[in-house]
Image 1 (cartoon, rainbow, N blue to C red):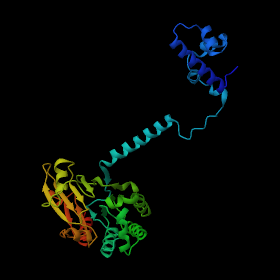
Image 2 (cartoon, one colour):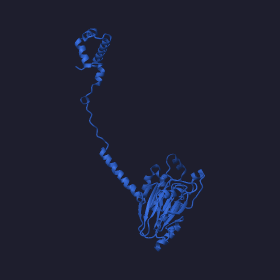
Image 3 (cartoon, rainbow, N blue to C red):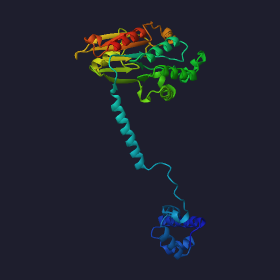
Image 4 (tube, rainbow, N blue to C red):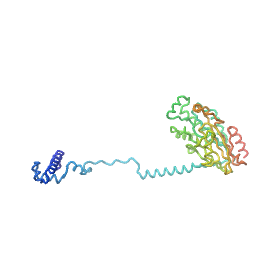
Length: 359
């Protein structure tokens, strides 16, 4: 018969008294102890053999047969099997690896003969009231109507204020939604060769709508790259030209505005042209390379004509033009003429049209 909790307590009390009696009177037999404890000898002997010690502890040590007590059905697992998860992650890693290798140097095939002009478009900040929107639209129209002229955006398409900086929209006549519409219109006027996303573009999930704006303009969204893009332009005739464009390059100097770009050419990837934006200043530097070509380093200021933050920190204004036309003529007779900068897009478009007509 199963023991009730009351019985267990009683048995435990009797066995504890038995242990105390044996400790006080060593050699006391079970029969003698049964008389003192007033329990039958056979009962005391059974309890000692069954429990030996505290019966509650003994009972706690006994395993429970849970299956005999209750049945709980196994719930379906909502997660994918671990083998499928590993396979999916391996496939994603493989795609990322292929994409990374491709973007190390994006091959661009120039199909038409003659030179081209790559227009480095500085930070537009189209939703800022300080953006020279008339100049921006005019320049995009020049690019859009001139064969052989292609836009390369250097980032910060909109202000895209986030966090505590979102309060700045209260001082702007342009909403965030209007900024997206302006960006989409800009890309439609001159579908870009590539777009580098700047720090402002990366805030607030900005890459999603920037990719959307590009698709709306008919441009492959894969040409949108965070921070920087490196391209090699191959021509029907002449040697290829490599361009490394970034929102900014690491390394700065108060004595040289293109210090980081020149450092990249000396200690990093050796390309014909390095271009950056971000700092809202203009600068250019040309230097012959040991390989025989001329390396150019350009920094482009952009269309934000007035900058409250620059005035706040006392930065000097160093601007020549918001966009830079870079003429690339692979058939030039001297290396110094293969790459030629134009700070006036109208002049660049006119000269490009003349050269392509002659070609």
